[in-house]
Image 1 (cartoon, rainbow, N blue to C red):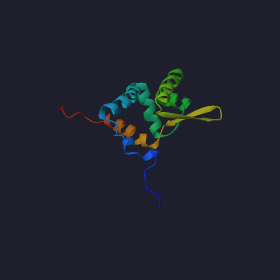
Image 2: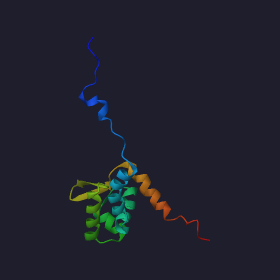
Image 3: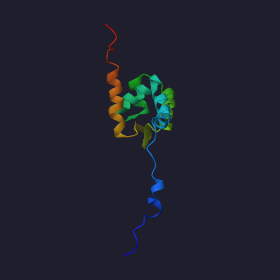
Image 4: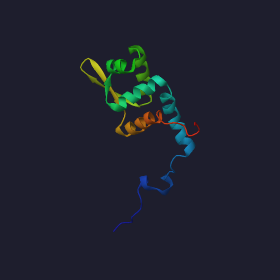
Length: 118
């Protein structure tokens, strides 16, 4: 039997620590900035319900088509939404199923009453 030495990808010095809280915050800040806009958050809440076309988002949100498209571009840049061409329309959806529940949770927070109010 030959010696059982780790290959180049298994060197102990290659083990990296998980990102620090500061590093994770740095990665998350642009995502939260994208969500901080009321129009973009409206679009995200609608997309958490189901995929929509730009027309459907325009009708459901009351936001003009040009502005909806602009905000979808920002959300796409942050990889929060995906677009799939279907015929003559594009269908937008959240980037992943794991994002649906947190977005819906944000929606329920709008109904919560702060504890400091009487």
